[in-house]
Amino acid sequence: MEVDEENPGSTSPTEASDLGPDSQTLVSSVHATPLQPIQPIVPPVVVPPIAPVVPPIAPIPSILPPPVIRPLAPLPVRPPVLRPPILQNGEVRESDSDSDNEDSGPTRTAPGTTGEYEISEESRLVRERQEKAIQELMMKRRAKALAVPTNDMAVRTRLRKLGEPMTLFGEREMERRERLRMIMAKLDAEGQLEKLMKAHEEEEAAATAAKADVEEEIIQYPFYTEGTKTLKDARVDIARYSLVQAALRIRREQRKRDDPDEDTDAELDWALGQAANLVLDCSEIGDDRPLSGCSFSRDGEKLATCSLSGVAKLWKMPNVEKEFTLNGHTERATDVTFSPVHDHLATASADRTARLWDTRGSLLRTFEGHLDRLARISFHPSGKYLGTTSFDKTWRLWDVENGEELLLQEGHSRSVYGLDFHRDGSLAASCGLDALARVWDLRTGRSILALEGHVKPVLGISFSPNGYHLATGGEDNTCRVWDLRKRKTLYTIPAHSNLISEVKFEPQEGYFLVTASYDMTAKIWSARDFKPVKTLAGHESKVTSLDVTGDGRYIATVSHDRKIKLWSSSSKEKEQGMDVD
Image (cartoon, rainbow, N blue to C red; front, side, top):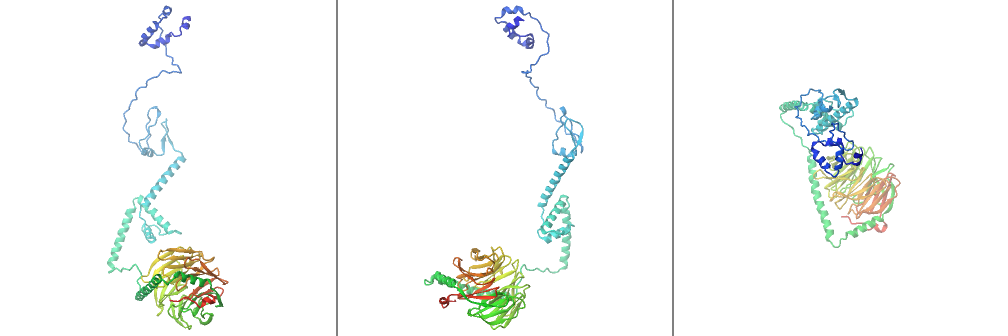
């Protein structure tokens, strides 16, 4: 024991036995060290082999055997419900495809066991919801790929062919079309759509062939409404008139441009100065009921007014003295206008008729044909034609000579209210309660411009004498000036605090614009930059209509306060009117 303690580096019997025969050389070399006196003390005793003790801290590393690659067994043919085979160590072999899991049905095999179990109710509901969502998605994809008619009548016909009700209670057009789409998608998924539609196509083909055998000739209808010969003659006449007037207007503009003596700015300033000096010259009670329209004659010597009592009256200027009373309408009169050529005037009424009168108060002609009350009325510059607007969503063109209806023009989605003709006579502009203004070519009958900008009904419209400006006013309290060359709004004037009932350009050169409003005022605007020039305040109620004389000296306004107000320039300016072309 003492020898062992003194020689801690000696090898224990257990460790010697662990070295084995391969390490004998190492042991002999250890004995060859200078510790030779100690060797006789340790006898060569052979220790019997004992079980090795593995220390917990430093385990003896062992070399793992190489993995054994097992050959793949062929996949067995599985029945609809088959328990997956159990491999070694209790592990369940995973299926090679997702279809195996789907074929396994509601029964599963728990890991490490050989028994079956049923999935929970919650899991089954989740699985059913997922499958239902996938089916709905595939149905929607299939439905989007189908060609479904967009015409409602075609949709109804297709539903009838498929044996479904054409419409359900409260069903709208888009809902009906979507129902047809889903029905067709369902039939397509079941493989019945093509067969069913083919049978219907064969039935239709047979019915069409039988119908074709019965009918000897097929009547082909034109895609447009064919006009009468009188309308064609009127269009030719309007074209000839407009070409001459347009040439005169262009020649006049060229003269102003080339003549050094012509100073357009000075003329404009003079006209605006005259308008700024307008004062209330006369105020007269026009009728027992509110007044609805007024118009000056072409020479400015007479003024015509109409009222809600259905009576139109003629007044002598400039003292506003009554001359004649025109009785004939059975309902309220809505507008009155003088002919630009003859001494005639026309009135419109809510009794659905327009009437033509002479200046002596005699009824010349009645224009009947509208299906609802009339709104505004206007003469063509040639004086041969009369335009009327109505709440039946149309405006019509009449022959003044014989009272024949030449044109029934549709195009507005709601009632048509205002109408004006271009100075050349080639164009007509209409406005209505659909917040839209349209420009029509009278020579071809086409709508060449649709002016969108107002957000509420448009009540007043007027062409400028320069030929390319158009003014509109409506219930949105704004007046818009359109440039027909650019086809867009040139100016938007926040003109009044209430709706604008009528707009009128100065008829000679268009140097200023006048607007009437329900805020009980009329305002004058400069045509140069459309800035305010003068406010004509004096009425006690809504101003319904206005008119300007040809020389720009007088402006007449009528109102619901039953009064006619005549505005004129100062005494110095009265003798210096603008020259009328």
